[in-house]
Structure formats: C-alpha cells, structure tokens
Image (tube, rainbow, N blue to C red; front, top):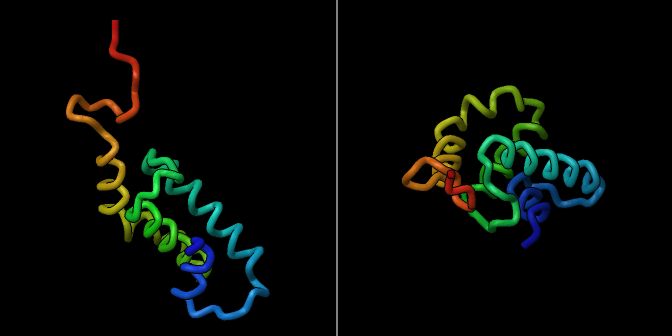
Length: 97
C-alpha cells in the first residue's frame, strides 16, 4: 500500500481533493525523518515509515512543533539503530588510515 493511502486511511480521509497537499506533507516528513535519523527512506524500515506517518499527522493538524519532543525516544532509537558497535554509521567504508 502506498504511503499516501496508509495516511489517508489512518486519518479517515476518503476523498482525493487533498492528495497533492498530502503528498507534499509526506515528502517533507520523509525528508525530515531522514535528516533526524540518518535512515534512508527507501530502506523499507517500518519504524521509519511510522515516524513519517506520525510527523505527517502532526503537520496536517498544524502541530508539527510538538512532534520532535513527543517522539524523541523513537527518533533517537531509530537513529541509534544505524550505528555499528564501533560507533560508525552502518554503510561507512572509511576504515581510517
């Protein structure tokens, strides 16, 4: 199911009048969660998608200023999941010289 369809179902939106605005909200939320966590949006991570949907809900309801505070532990947890045991980000190829 496309992210916009999941969002519309969650928000009980049954029309397509707002689809352009909703897609813009989802795109900006995806970019924001990627910036906050370092997780790539195409990784298929369910926690990432959940945070995108939640942030989009906050944006849709004009409450985005409260999102980071209310979801801080989930944001930090997802961000930490990208780190390896030595503290580098997974996918880093720089082994140092």
